[in-house]
Figure 1: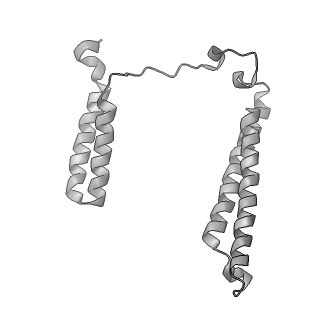
Figure 2 (figure 1 turned 45 degrees about the vertical axis):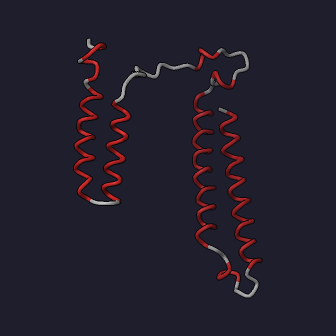
Figure 3 (figure 1 turned 30 degrees about the vertical axis):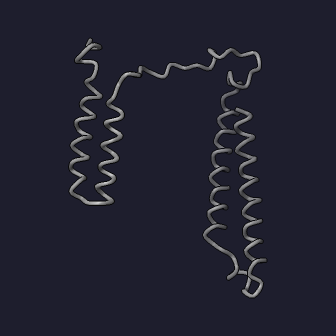
Length: 144
């Protein structure tokens, strides 16, 4: 956790440094304009907001580390791999339904971009994929 916190603080410093360099470079690249007209505001503000977002995450992880009052297994040199291995749930490596679900999202997105007549087709494929994925353990070889 300490490494994560340090990485976020380094990222804050990087974004602030790059923001200063970017803004200064724009001012120096346009000497014929006034300084406030020479700044490319979209990039400067975006880099500053990137620094603020990294600052928020760094502050949050720092507060969690202080409230936790302990080290994570990832921070201890003598820890085993199994010490930080939580139970993530049950997954079906043979299941094709996530692929069908992704295809339905692709058809719906193409329907929004190309023609709205494809959107109901994507939603229909989505309904079939969700039902198939939810009930895949009730039929076939892996039925309960």
